[in-house]
Every structure is written in structure tokens, then in C-alpha cells.
Length: 259
Length: 317
Figure (cartoon, rainbow over the protein chains, first blue to last red):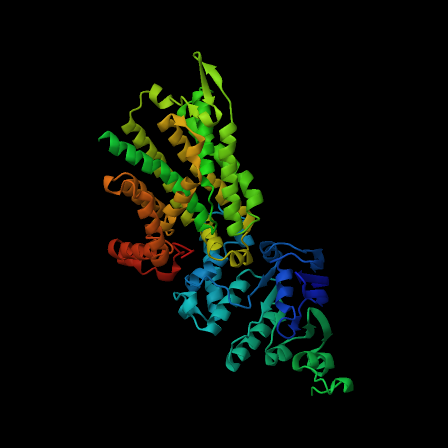
């Protein structure tokens, strides 16, 4: 469904992503892990066209979409959340979901003038549905900025889902969550994947979540892929363990030291 | 009404178009130091149309707005690829370029044995349509305010539609808006064109009131002021910039006690407001509070309980 071929992004001399090959199959929950600065978020930003790629290509459902701007990515069915939560923090929960509909295909396709006008019934019904799903119905009139951290994450997820995506890119959705919230997120992602048929690319540090929920994982370090496989394979992989835990000088020659 | 008051009020009306023009770009998150260029283009284009081509006033006004809008479109394509500070500098460079082009722009025809038309830095004399039609200064002032009311009404309609919501979304968080499916380039170009046309209308009105244009009037200070009007008056509603114009032209430029001190007081006022009310007197929060107060005071209880089912009044607040 999503194919990255030789994807590279260099910021000056820094190779944030360097020749990355990744294939996400339809129906998968695909995990992207790696230490801080290994290029995970950059990869998400490249897929969404936040900045231009240095080299390589991105294709989605067989069509090349390299360097398509974010609104085109959304139109293609790729929605995302941000590592640092991005919401219109002074707008209420309801308003955030409502304005998020402005850019969407269903609104856009109504013609030249009506696409400038707002608030049709379908749009409102969809907002109610998202409110219900995210469990934020009782917070509908509160400013998004005043919500608890976990609630803001839920709202962001609801906003991304409002676009009815085929592929969902989640950039560290569990960051800052407690165990209970991680468990809820785990269930939510499974439900989205299994019941709604949404393919998910999950960038995450929280291993409890990644190892439990994903079908396949790619591990990055310094912008390069160092391993790919099932969660169990990745857990056993020596290169991954070294990337996370480091490799001590003395034990280096013996090739271990990180059990 | 005494002559001086009519003149002051007419000035406030005309400059309001420029302030609204800068305001449209401010709510989409762009700072332009170049709106005076579109004011100038509107002024020259409409002046040429009525004084040299024999057009009527209204076609001339529409033509002035269209020419300014078209120029804004040409400016928008290259400059909207720049962001923030670079856009500000790009618009400034464009405005200076336009001013310098008018300094060397010569296009004159002989009418009744007299040369009429732009003559470089000598200026453009003889835009006498209003005088020839025997329209008094007072009536012309009413005409300015009628056009202003029309433009304001249009802006209020826009602010209540999806287009207005998208402009404010872009102004709040461009990346988030794009992520939610907003085509940034399309909507920013649209904002630039509308802003250019609004400034062009103001320019056309200016040309016909003064009968005489000089390139040096359209300098950077005019653009800086038009930006400041929105920042003083507030970005919560289109009335904000008008308050800014009223304070500056109505009070500082025209009242005798401030004569000679205008720029000092104005500069101080801008500095104070940027510290205490960074989005102006009538900012989004103030507008919200006013709208809520209005609803609670004047609407029926049944309507009031609508609560969250209502679309947002000011999506960018």
C-alpha cells in the first residue's frame, strides 16, 4: 500500500533519512522504531509532503506521490497525527473537529460556491460521530488547550479519523501516556485496524504498545534501516539492541554486551 | 458639515480600504509591507480610465480594483512560496518597485489642447471626473462610505463562511490547516487577490477625490501604517482596522493638539498595544465576549440553549 524506495532527506550535512526502503502492506499495523533522532518523524513528514525529499520516492496504492503537499496526501487518504500535539488550542473540542472538515473531499466536491459555505448537516453528523468515538462528548465545549494530555491525543486521533483515511500515520501517539491510557490506545488501534480496515504506520517509543499491536516492524538508526521483521524477531535482533542500549567499548569485539 | 470635517472623514474612509486590505492578509498569517502598491495601482488605473479613456466613475472603480487584484495575483505566485519574514520583505520590495515604475511611467494624451495622464515623477494631474459631474465633497464622502459599507458587508459574509474559517485556520497554524486538507497556496493566493482588489478600490476613490496623484505618496510609510491599523484596532473582526484608522487619522493626524507629535504618539501607541494586546483592541477574545453578550441580552431563551451545535463564530480565535 505504501512504498518508500531509497527515501532520503538531508538537512545540510545531516542525513536524517538515508536510503530508506519500507513497504507497508494493506491491512497491516506497521511499526517504525528507533532511538531519538533516527529519522522516524522525518519519514512521516516526507510521506505527508511537509518538506521535499532529497532523493528516493514515495508511492501509495501504486501511484507515485513523492513531494505531494499535505492536503494532497490527505485527499489521497493519508491522515496523520503529530509528535507534538497540534490542535487549534483556543477552539473547543467540537470546533476543532468541525473546522477539520473544511479541507475534506466531501466538502470540496460540492462545487465552486458551496465549497466556500459552511456547516451542512452531513458535516455536523460526522462531528458527533467522532465525538462519540473519541469519548470526548462531555468535553465538547471545552477549549482543546485545556484538555488533559491523553485527551488531547484522543482528539488529535479523532481529527485524523474524521478524514476517513485509508492509511493513518501516528507519530508517537503514546508519548506521555500512562499505562492505562496506553492500554486503551492499544485497543483503539486494533479496533481501527480490524473493524475499520485502516492501515496504520505507527512511529513509537513505547515498546509495550509497539510489540503488542504491530504485525511488522522496521528499526531505524541514523536514518538507515537496521532491521525489519516481526515483533519477536526485532526483539531478538542484536543490531536493534545495540542501537537502543549501546555497545560498550570493551565488549565490542565480542559482539554482545546488551542482553 | 464643515469642510475640514468632511475632508477628515473622507480620508478615514479611503485609508480604511488599505487597512482592510492589510487585515485580510494578517488574518491569514501573512505580514505585507506592500499593500500601498495596490492602492497606487488602483488609483492610477481608475484615473487613466476616467480622465483619459472617458470611462464613467463606476467602471473606472471596478477597473481599478481589477487591475490591483491582477497585480496581486502576479505578486502572489512568487512571494507566497516565501514564508514569514521573507514574504514581508518580498512585498516591500514589490511595493518599492511599483512606486519607482510610476516615477518613470509616462502615458499622456491630448484632451482639449491639454496633455493629460501620468507624467513620471511630475505626477498625474487632471482626474477631474468628480468635479466635472459637480459632485460635492460631502456627497463624495457619502459615496466613499457607501462603498466601504459594501466591502465590509462582503468581508463579514466571508468571515462566516468556510472561506473565512480556512483563512483563519491558515493564520493560526499553517501546517495543521494543510494537514486537515487545506490547499495553502490556493487560499493564500485568493486572500492576496481579494486584499489587492480592496486596496485598489481605496486607491480609485483616492484618485478621484484628490484629482492629482504623485508616486511619492505611495511610499513605505503608507504600508506600515495600514499594517499598524489592524494591529491597533484588532484582528478579531473587520471593524478592528477601522478603529485603528479612526484613532490615527481622526485623532492623531487631524486634531490640533497632536500636530507635530503624530508619529511619536502613534509609535508609542503601537508599542504599548503590542505589549498589552498583541492582537489589538478588538481581538478574537473581545469579539467572542461581545457576541456572547449580545446573544444573552437580545436573543430568545430557546435560541440561547443551542450551545455546541452552532458552528464557530471565529474559528481562528
